[in-house]
Image (cartoon, rainbow, N blue to C red):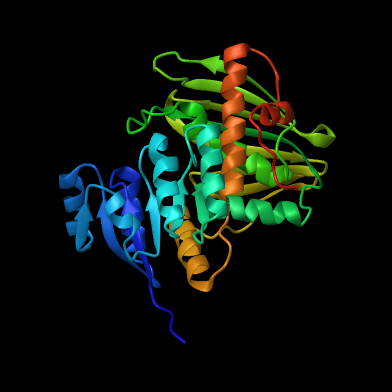
Length: 328
């Protein structure tokens, strides 16, 4: 039996919102029914370009509308407020990362989700990068034994569209989430060095996360380097997996040599939005969900605390101080 298309509104028509509209307008099983942006001219221009009939400036006009779901592509400081309003009206929500601009707001989203028929998906897009998917499959198959160490590097010039958060919540948070995926648990401790060289908020950071069983992740991020680089190394007991996020390559290095498994070359955003639409249509759980988003925001906040205090932050103590108890 054919299912009704998922009716979706896109909130925020800036750089990333335009990409959401572009991809969603090409997908089967959904219909973009409205575009909302505080800039009416921008909302109108995007709606005209992608043949969306309705455009508006106030997302609250859609809260009680007959849309099934929304994607939130606004500045990070507004993510929680918009998401909660839609959750309370029973809509499904895909929030671009970070889920919220701080831990308190993230907790508010989690609380709202508990009483909502709507479900939350957090746009940690690297989970949908085909290279990451292939690397995680290889890890699960034991290609390099047990993973022990992660080194991640995300460097490049400042993305001018980002002004409400620093490099930790915008950039480092990708690798915080991936370290959580690889090791299967939040970190035990966090230590960070860095600062604000030419921007108001932090623009360079090096983070050390320690996990149980002696595992660790070292994550480097900045908005200072002229050339953009996105790479990660996962060292295991029997080899190393290297990921190149931009070219979507995976290289596995072992004692007998190195090889590159085949990686499907698909746009990560398309994979992510396909999963969002399919999961809603089939009534499945969304992933990454609000708990995954909460953990990433909490670790990012702990990184900033370590930067300010120049001390190691024990993650369990940090959560306890904020009244957070993660599901086991």
